[in-house]
Image (cartoon, rainbow, N blue to C red; front, side):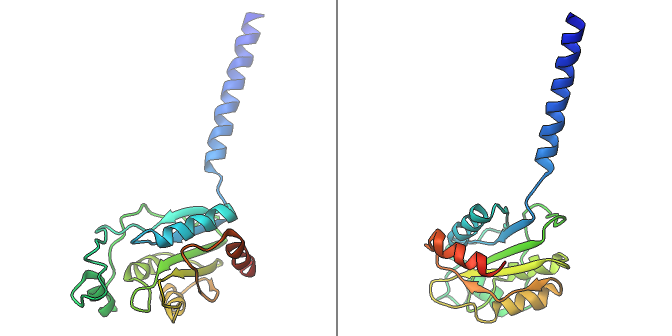
Length: 184
């Protein structure tokens, strides 16, 4: 009887380990990718992930942006210099991203000087978005999307890109859900 009990307990433990491993490997078919220098885009991206059950991936630059780097009044600030150089591609420190299994990808970024930060170019040029729906969104204190969504689509060269939208930092869950549902 004791041997049977030990055997059953061993089987139960093996089954629980198997289930835990399989659960860890599962993920949503939706991903929210974002870059945020000040936390504004991050807060919106996290809300989208919460409301959709999506996985979240933050684009982190190797060299973090300081307040001085972000000073749009200084034409010699890092972001001003990057913006003025269309070939600039800041390096990404985040781990490699495996897009397998993702059908829908929200792409979030702040608007800098009316366009995407150059690190977004680094990101979209690195991956193949074929067969995926790409939903760009931006945050800004006053600027609209402009041509930033089109620039992402052109630089990516793959994926089905929908029209981008500017979302307010304090957007309500109700308003965010309405926007999410228009992109389904």
